[in-house]
Image 1: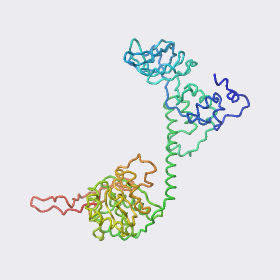
Image 2 (image 1 turned 90 degrees about the vertical axis):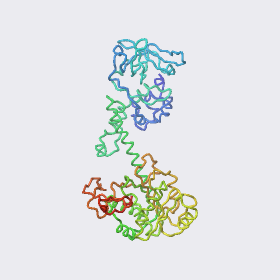
Image 3 (image 1 turned 180 degrees about the vertical axis):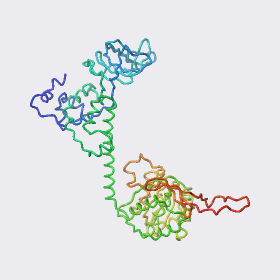
Image 4 (image 1 turned 90 degrees about the horizontal axis):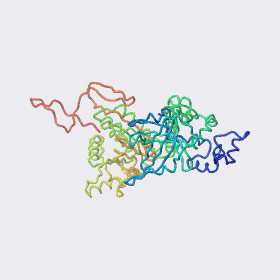
Length: 507
């Protein structure tokens, strides 16, 4: 063997040689020479410690190996046998089938791999195969392996009764050789592995320690043990990604300067007094978080998530008034003209007692109206504008944009959201959505998040039926249904109205 001829491998085995360490170059590991070191480098293995981190990609359960004589057509079996003959058989339709005959102490079984003639170069006579798959009757019993492991010619049945780890390998490095290298050095390397997670984290996650997990994935006695070890490695990987993401957010927030607003409580207090409904605990909590972000020296980039009817729009209106109180402009972008017009009508009605008139900018406006709106936006006058994609057009410019609100943010592209934020000098950004996209890249994901769980309660109603904003617990009280101001009035048989219509609650 190449290992036996390799002088380096012999030095590793000589008495008095330095003990194998995790940082030992893999070239000096017993059983590995310069040639195999090059092959291992293709797998990302350059040190002895990397051998432990090379996790098996799957497992073959040899604890339930069936004698070949007991394999019956229609059953799904796992057999262990030695190749006594092999060959590639062509068919009339041009398909080439690789076939090998396995033998154990009980009998013979033909294995067939349709469309895989290349296996003739990797499976040789006298190789021991562990094969799993269904057995059918085709000119006798025939196994069509779903998975197989080539244990090489030297295996004399030692794989039986074990769970075999199947590693990712490369051309020129047989599976058995890689498994033997890792297996031979596990006892030396595992005691050197240091656990770096706190004990309370491991206990709370219910996963084994790192040395135990590595032993389980490389030397399992059952598939369940292997999966338990893999769960620890998966947990550690996800935890590392989460910690890196949180750290990146902290660094980004520390270096992200923005507008420092003052909470003057002028327009916001007036709006709260004029509202036809009371804010829920969740809305108050979210508003405090948003105002805290806006009054900090850091630029806000927050996602507001809430179900339909939970009151995201009224929260955005309060945030816009904070910007207007400080002499800045606020813009709300909606994905459709219908939704933008709905927001504009709602804002117009709620801001009328305060003497404020919001602007509307959509593609449906005429040329004269668009020019007039553009002129007002280009000034430094504090105002609130509601619009669609027209807000991000090159012809639209803001004189003093301080807050950007994007409704249904998942319906806009990343560049469109950035384009609206680029209309001002580092304005605060508030994204709203009922269906956040979990697949968004961390670079484009909002830095902070808040969730609304309840709709606003109408002021003066006999009772409230809502969800607590803090605990999400349901607080049920007798609720009086109120009607939309634009809806039809229910009439008694005598023609008298049953009750005055209630004002439409803000979305």
